[in-house]
Length: 303
Picture 1 (spheres, rainbow, N blue to C red):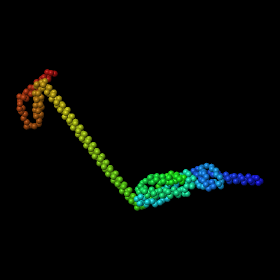
Picture 2 (picture 1 turned 90 degrees about the vertical axis):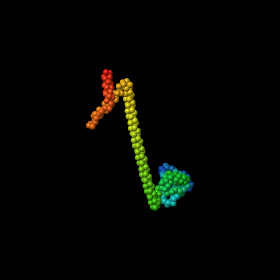
Picture 3 (picture 1 turned 180 degrees about the horizontal axis):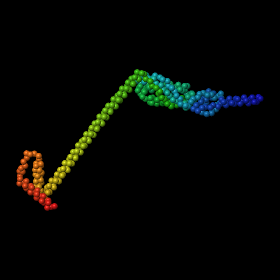
């Protein structure tokens, strides 16, 4: 009976020892173990074994990304405007030993450092730059905080300026300035549109004048061509008449008689009652008729 009691007692002690010796660490968690008050090792995810009563848990950290809210504070810009600003810092623990022994309050220290850096950076910027250059401000904060937190076992992954509030008077002045700027841009846009319209109109008129000048030039060329063709025709006719006169001596008399007959025919066809036709040179008229009859006779014999 005593032996069974002894075995039972030993079994209980073994179970308690194993229960205390086995440490199961969850995923995304780091546990710092001290042995007799001195850093021993860092436990990772899974099953770990320690020496009960000698090894003690000192601290534990999550390796997930964590958010640190930087409290709102009043900051004065370079142009002496007081603004309210806050930010959000995202960190990730990558060294549990440094996070335990290098800094007492990691999140508080990062928040205080972010506030100090914000005051220093905004003090070198004017209000307009502060409102329009948040990305640059975020980059400066990220660099400064990451450099400082690298010795604390943490990695600053991102910094975002959450909100910037300006006094109501300054806000009203900014709104008036923005309204004036919008009006100025609208005026410039309208003036630019009017200028472009005038340019297009002048260009259209220039092209129209050019087309008209081109049409006049083409018309002048057409008239010139017509006159040249008429002159060439008259020249050809004169050459044919001269050739005919050289070949037949009565050709000139024939042409003269033809023109006179046409002239008298025109006078005869006139409706005027007060007309008297008296040939001045009757002999020449008779001669012309004789020449005309002679030419017609030659033409008939030729045929």
